[in-house]
Image (cartoon, rainbow, N blue to C red; front, side, top):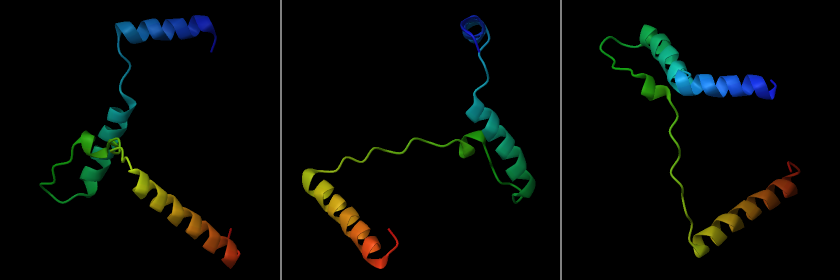
Length: 83
């Protein structure tokens, strides 16, 4: 795609917004899942859209403990010949 075509797509997006791909995929998944769901199930496209995971901030001590565990697991894999 050259610069001119990209500029046209950007201008088109400002005039007539492109559909949200997550919402389109969620709608398709809702239709398919509804065909196999029990009667009365309330499925919405938002049920199939991934949500961002909450950020976990580890304190200094918890972070050190986490990385000690990762190191121990890697050392165990090396000893078993799986690493």
